[in-house]
Figure 1 (cartoon, rainbow over the protein chains, first blue to last red):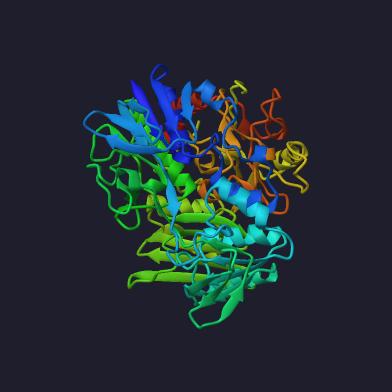
Figure 2 (cartoon, helix red, strand yellow):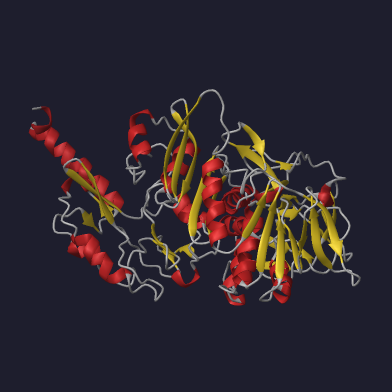
Length: 416
Length: 163
């Protein structure tokens, strides 16, 4: 059996670990367009800030590929897939036949198609190489502008700030991290960021990028005609599934690659997992792309087992994130900032501490925790399992529930 | 890779809340990494009315803390226990967000998420050694269930279960 995995990050690595648990002899080929062995993508912000060294970045030990008998091709891009012949071809002309194929190519940053976006001091911020390039520009006293107030924008701003760059975030949404934070938590996080030295402009977008005679970007013009100057510009306007190379195949795509509970696409020996996949979303009751590391790992594992012939089913994911913004821990779980008719919301707010629970009938649908995120996993678990919380609602609201020990008999977690 | 098979079994109805396990853990856990500066334990007692319950890592079969770890600092040892390489922990709290048992402690300033790593280098885990009531033991889970079944059967046969 020959397994080919396109992509070498969380989903791919977890998949090959599962494959090897079952299939000791099969052949495994991994293909990555980056020049590195697997590293931890979210750590690029720490790397930029100088908190991580090169060797801290790797997700697995150096012997990983040898130990799992994997042929790793780095710096190679896949040009196309021939589904009939079960063949993938690299852009360099080489091609490989597969028996099982996993597409775990992750996401790629959206770019602004306005003049100046490809100047040499304009960057996106999703890969290690981005952080390396930015490091060269991010010197003390330089001025940096970050476009976008999502997770990537916040992390990029923090990284630049740690380098001594004077950072301005330009956020077109009505608040920071607008997809997951509500008004109050957005305000807390925004104030906290500002105290750490990062300036923010909220509710305005960029109309024009200004370049100097050398072709470098030197500033931006906002929609209110305000002009901001900069030496470095980071575009953090979201990420979308990296699926361009399969667009002319019969693999079913929507926003991402549509997969079933076994992470299988509509083609029976082709699987997809991670940020590229559109898999079951528990709270929205349909498939969606939820681009977060923990789900990429889970999906990768499930894909791997199924590729090796052992049936495993994905129980579905929820949107969730844990980030530390200038030292302030923030967790957002499930449906955290939208309201509909049947929803009951409980708040607690005192200074930098904020807690919001969103109940939907007798189930927990979402939560926001700011400042104190302890036992967040208990809430995650209640949301993912959609357990009836009638009997523990008071404890949840009072935040006295510190363990899921007594409430998770049927949630599929077995003890050793 | 440690292939030491470790079981820490919790029989909670015996716990009297003496806190000796917590104190024993504090002494060893500060030594797992130079990064750990604050007093902390990887076991804690939860009080519910007059009864207590020790919360400790349950080594879930599909451990969410391992899957959720972005730096790859958590792994399952060959013997079955999930351990942590604290030098590689960055304090992102992804594991805290995913542990259903609330068994991971956060050291905010030190950027470390502490959980019970089983004290695999020791014959008897200090928390187990410190437990005077027999709540914590190194009994294998299968032996434990066999024992409870046997006790239940004995109670039944002696008539005490239907009194």
